Length: 551
Image 1 (cartoon, helix red, strand yellow):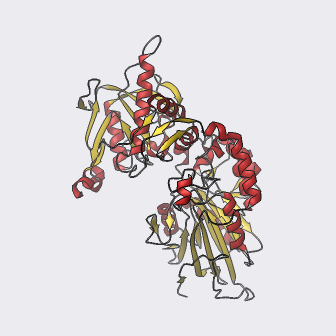
Image 2: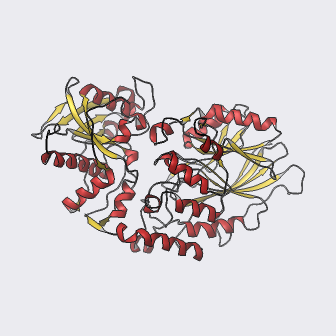
Image 3: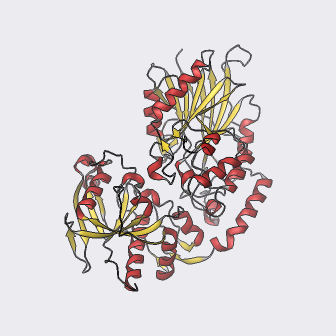
């Protein structure tokens, strides 16, 4: 039967209406509503389009979305009148606001239980504070947790919490979990936990389930939109992937956030269709998909799309009171003003060139370390030449006006330490080449992201990324720019996370002469207090010559 997409809904005061093609009473047929979220990142309160707490001005301009209390009411409405529904979360509930930094997952667990999720998978950020914090969070959840491609054989306590898949016996339907295999490089999961090829792990689970007679098989992913499409094409027997990790908006092509259709349909190894959905991030949207399964377990009709959770949507009063209570515990500290931003500091193009937030953060890192060196007691470390940070280490922009403790934590929530280490010029050149090309020539590892820099400038051509950086220069103490000398040793300021191999930006190796300073949020706090006013700027320190040529 030819699959037919039922055109997306218009949200009314109640629910999206799905015109059922097949009656539930027909033997072997199933109509199911799937409601899904992903990458909430501790946005318990509503946020603006930068992922920051809504100001009065944001609310007045309609730039305020989401929030757990509004989610609760909307989810209840979407489930109303539906005989079969599942509420799923695609991971990365952790990190991003004071609700996580202060409570370390306790609030998140209570919210998820209150919203009555049916199933969740694990995100890479759930590991940011180590397996012990993650385990305490998962132990508090009232729902199953699934992930097929994590090896927990050396962690029996975690193995008891996380299973490859879960079977909803009443629906004769199973959901398999999987996560990005790069989690070990981009989180603090520790040396005893391994992440394996999701294609192999998911197919193994599908085969096991089919051997048990389960025909309706879904996946709950924290692997990214493009990666989900790749997995769908390389497996057989999977009906639907509910995704996360890449913060992808799928839906209306006229939306500036658009990355693909909702659902995206990919042909699998058997020539059958696998549907893929995702719902952006921060709880701004809730995904709502109605599907019809035929007796062979195949989805033959669907309807739905992402629902933008507007500020004027009704909020659950009991949950609002809980949230107010949690917020009051950290509000005074979070609202302490450190300085001012003269204009908005945005994150536009941070993954392709220098950006306002990248320049601010790396300049602050370099200035902080140099200031420490000027007042160093005892043997003074070498003068810091450059600062390098992964773009993913900067989690939000800063709005014009007061810069508070809470905003700094939102920008840098991970607790990574600023460190200083000696590095040969050749390693710096290799690093720039790897970042531009997307993989390391020495190890073959994929580089998971871009960088922002200070004291360093380089250019590249995005149409010829395989050629690496075209130019690369470091600024000396007199302010002059000089090409990187492969044989010279430079002093590099970065994060301990990156030196441990995070994102595969640097080679993971012993670095005995590394000096550790404060955490990044503490460094930013000190610098904002010192300079008082932060003014955003771009100076072309990272240039894509292909983009420049088109301007």
